Amino acid sequence: MDRHLSEAGDTSANEESDTEKVPRTLRDAPAKSDRKKSKRQAQPDDTKEEEDEATRELQQRTQKYKRGAEASGKVRSKKAQAGIDHAQKQKAEAAKAAARSEMLLTESGGYLEAEGTERTFKFTQRQIAENVDIGSTDKMFNLKLDEFGPYSLKYSANGRHMLLGGRRGHIACVDWRNGRLGCELHVRETVRDVCWLHNESLFAVAQKKQAYIYDHTGAEVHSLTRHIEPTALGFMPHHMLLASTGMTGRVVYQDVTEGRVAGEHRSGYGPSHVLRISPYNAVAHVGHGNGVVTLWGPQQPQALAKVHCHRGPVQALALDSSGTYMATSGLDGRVRIWDIRRFEPLHEYRTARPAQALDISQRGLLAAAWGRSVSIWKDALTTRVGAPYMRHQLEADVSSAGFVPYDDVLGCGHAQGVASVLVPGAGEPNFDALVANPFQTPRQRQETEVRMLLDKLPADSVQLDPNFIGRMDPRTRAQQHSDSLADAHLRHAAARDSGAHLDSAVRNKTKGRNSTAKRYARKRNANVVDLKRLQEMERLEKDLRESAAKRRKGPLPAHETGALHRFYTEKNNTR
Image (tube, rainbow, N blue to C red; front, side):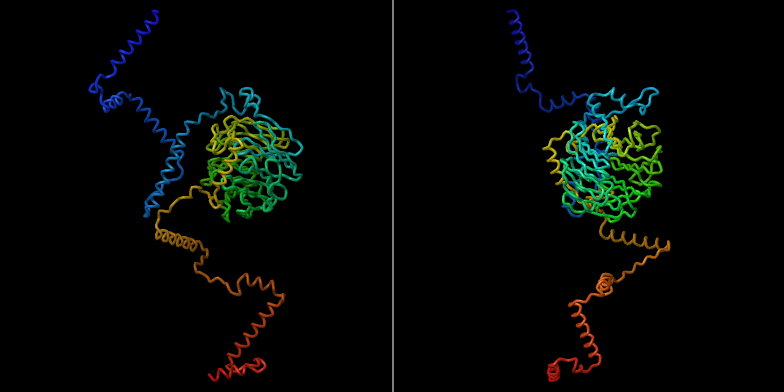
């Protein structure tokens, strides 16, 4: 009872205190502006400093996500200017939204760290397996496939599926995370390379005579007869183009959505065995036997650029995700790092034997394989590193190597099968589900496929600078004309000074009976006599006779005129 009374007393006291806080009349209540001032005065200075610091950090992050330079100058058309302003506003909002989304990236990548006199490249896979979780340990395995090797392997864009191709005809696609076999077949001929298409439902195989496309069940879908004796394949996901190069030295682009050939170019350097697609601008990098790497686009008849990388044949090639750096290995035993923006070499590494496989991870780790050894360098693109980050020894000679997207795993194909090596810090820890989702469902995969088809880019949009689309030339038409004339004069002067002949006169093109096509047709049909040709010969003879008679200015002979010709002449005379 005393307890209840005490509670009642407490409640009455609380009510009295509440009544004291509430103003009795409207005059006693503070004004709205006074409440705002009191709130502003109550804010400490530390809160303002935190807000300013967050704003500065957001601006720095926004600079990282900006794409392209802002439009300078004004245009006369108000409608066009409004469109430009709207596009610039959308760009700024997209960059700011991307910067704010970094707060949702909860995962962070880690690397191996050595203590004291230890070195990270001395850590073995067994030691790493003893210090990681069970899930990471399951990613380390070794497939014994010693009958149909050596193997080439590729991973899907989300890193969930692995595609294997044995040189002696064995093909298999595996969901390596869950240990499920998708399909397995034997084509009974040489397999030189394999490649995933837009997702794991279709893949392409470079076989002995031509390329083929198979589905996820192993059924043959298409036979690509224009890809003759292919040796390397590459796919452009944003353009839906399959690129190949082979023994003929040609670079062929096939549109997998329409089935037509988007481009076919002759390199002129003989057979090539190396091809990589840049993830930045979708330009195909092809390595040749004379040490030259050529850059190709589907709609350009000539190479976009040519880089002399090695003194011997190019053995392997790798590109980073930003499109800034390129790593090449040649038969001269060197691995060179190139800056693609300037086409200049930065530094090089020497290997015991020529590297047969190269790959660059999402976070910039460089893997090089030669013989049975695989070496991985950290920060090897920007600076020259003295010692490697990791080393691993395999059972047989390595034929291909590739990092798994969004995972710390390196896959190696060799003569005895396939090995999966754990490399801490290789993959991107955070993924974008709209770009590549490792945990996507069949329904999400279908929606992604439809979205990719709707967002497909034309083949002529493949250029060295992918930001050229949407740019405007601020010069007027008169300025453009004057600049072009000045460039022509400069070229003419340079050619004249160098001694080269530059004939600027416009020549009349022969389009009559002495054109190239006419001469070829005459030579081809010189010994062919048909009714049409006989009629034409008779007509030409008649025209020649009439022209000769006109020159004589007299009547035609009787045997050359018709029966009624005399009446026709008399009628004309009477007129």
